[in-house]
Amino acid sequence: MGQLRQENTGEIKKFVIEQIKAEQKTVPAETKQSETERLPQLKPSILAEKYPRLKEIDHKLKDQNNAIFEREKKRDKLKKELSECTSIFKGGRRKELQQEIDNIDVQISNMKKRLSSIV
Image 1 (cartoon, rainbow, N blue to C red):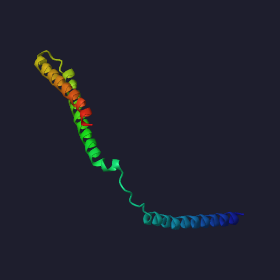
Image 2: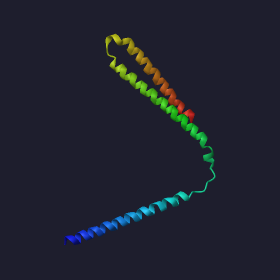
Image 3: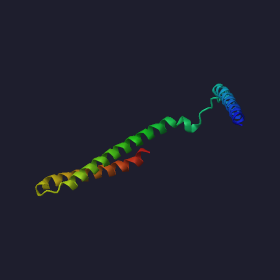
Image 4: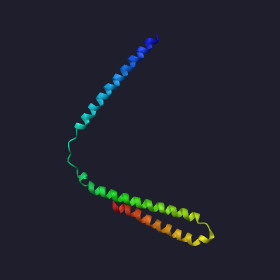
């Protein structure tokens, strides 16, 4: 009885190995077909002709958003520094920090307004 089980498992293993080898042989053939087949070049549409300008606008918007993000990070650092500035002797520093924060807030609002003018 033990020999029958071993023979059956041996036959099953051989069958599985043969199937795997057959699948491996068919995969490269399929990839060769997809490599040789190419879509014909289409004539660019009107929108595609305007694409370089759209790409330029998108680049400007991303740059502006990055600049706004950097200003917001700087403002957050200044706010954190302001909250840590609690000593009586640091009154002058608190005023300076508050002025810097106010200036950055004005810059950020102007930059956000400019976003719509870019488009």
